[in-house]
Image 1 (cartoon, rainbow over the protein chains, first blue to last red):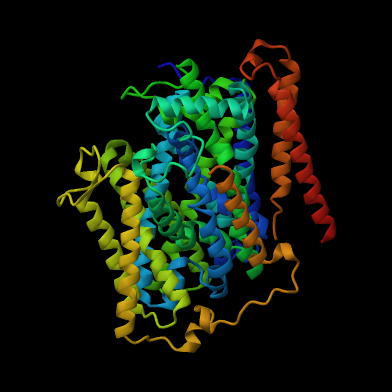
Image 2 (cartoon, rainbow over the protein chains, first blue to last red; image 1 turned 180 degrees about the horizontal axis):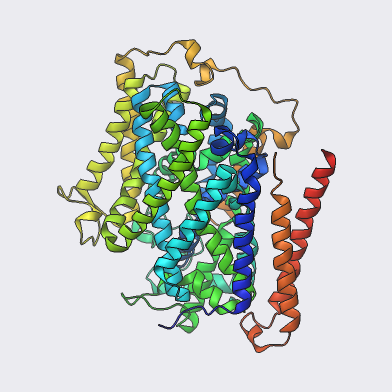
Length: 569
Length: 67
């Protein structure tokens, strides 16, 4: 089978050097892993800038890199809503307003916060759904890596699965969360330094920004949209039919900007764990804010390549390979550009960057899984009151178990594509109602445990019901929705997701308030100190330098996001 | 903190830089650079990676001296 990318010996040398360092870092960290806190929480000793970069990298898996470039080609600059609207405000919120309770409560995981604030059943519900989701995500990531490398390089599918599983296992087993975080920092710089030249050369090839805007105008007109659709982020969101994404401004602002993004950035343990590992309250609060700065600029690295590729494709044809349905294969944007612009040597760096983001995507999920599985499931339900070293051993076992289940999921994904599609859909709406629970829990002391639990169930059920009663246009399979009938047809799947999230959130919010009003909280004010806004002493940070104060950083970051939205309006 | 990540990371990028610069020198004027629009990207970007690596190593060393 002909491969898309042919690696030279020098590229393998570079890849080899990377693996050597990854394993070496794990080995070097081994002697610091003495207690459970070291293994699961990096001993709460990581400086803010490292946590910040890990926070952003944990989210920047390879599927994200490839997917965002694909969206850049398919939808143009509107894709940046996932960054400037769908990430920055939520990241500022979690840093400034929520981190004091996450970090201050000394909870070791997000589910554990729910236990402290509400009760055991709410924690268990969240811990179970999270644990299942996270191993599946890790498995899907593994599957995607093996598929891509099979297609690009002709590597054996089983070899890729086996090798990535073993390497991730070794470095997490040895160095715990610290290993994962350090590798995320490596990945961050690899992605930035590996993709920046790709964008620079691509820009040069297309003839600069103005030439790109001109060519993308032709692309937009060719698809039957207004000329600026690919280069203006908000102007064409008045109606869903006016833009290729098929969404309108309200769905974007509420569904993506509010519910989905706050649900993910503020409650997903995968990212929050990075901030919990910080060496002080101030560092924990700055973690998401530091992360927001590169996040804001990432569209230039991950979305712009897609825009360049589609512009070049439209100009000369044949830039991108053609998929089965006759349209360009958008997922091939990044691989195609790597193969086209990078000679051997630099190609090795680009590929290593891609490999690093796959591996740290898996590792991030595995470290979040082993913590939740050990503390929130094993310690609270199977064997409580054991020694710290006992839980440390369990953590090691859970790491192996997590990897084994991930491998199984990777194989399941290769056999049953539809089931994976459905799971990803389900994961999309599991997080959505959770943000309502946290918002009420942290800022309204009247919220009770029963209310939180049944609110979550109601929210999740609503999302499921919404899916069962609506379909995206052109859906041909029950997995896309509508299995109980069709109340509404959305123009695209994305619009369906946005609205599912909005309904799920609203249901959880409403039900939690209603039940709180008729039930009594079992927690005393003393127990809730440090967990709820009105009962927690305000953090005084006037003595800190301005660049270390979360509120000031938050305002700067938000201002940056507003300016970017205006420039590319 | 136990292990300063800047040290191994700096070394790794410096190694990448040295490999790329060396490879760029050896392959200068090779037709493969038509791909990168005529720039010897291995030489140029290898230099950038080397510089980045050295800066990281310098930061790590400075931090080590302080403690």
